[in-house]
Image (cartoon, rainbow, N blue to C red; front, side, top):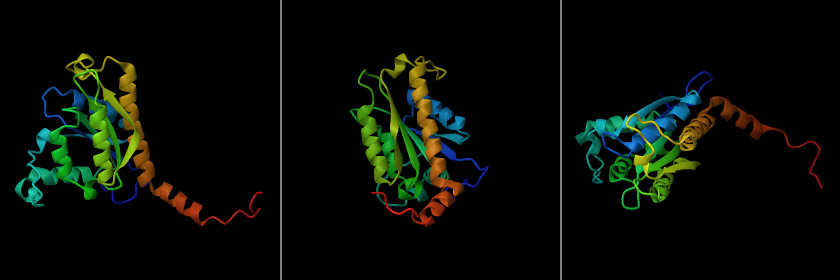
Length: 214
């Protein structure tokens, strides 16, 4: 999986999901998984990156966290190899989770610069996760990611998911899948060799031979 190169015809775009929740039964992880299904519908190769599997240290600004924790390097590599990322978070105290903020702090422009990012959030209360998503959008832009306009906030997630990850609201499920579809679609357009060639030809096209319209 190489994202610093164009996607050639027949190759798959790669989309990863990151859940900002460490709970064993995580509604955030369930929501991100449904979004990844949407990306898969667009023929993307998808992978869930479970932060529990990386044993991350706290970002202390030293820059050597990867030397002290191999999981940091593995996470950076996994995100670097993706063309697009779906970030999910529960809303905690009016923002996104600390574990996700720490994971993002351990990465940066090298992992997210030029990547297409989609956002989903869940909350236990009726107000939803809009504050978490707004903050997450700002952070994603700060590391030079392209954040799609579409996002999904699921209020009272405990009342909508079962333990198998099924969502009882098909409209919400469809919105989650659409986030995944859009991330896959725009990631392909952004990295497609064919799209780049078309734009190069477009920019080289001759001026309108009919002259300016009055």
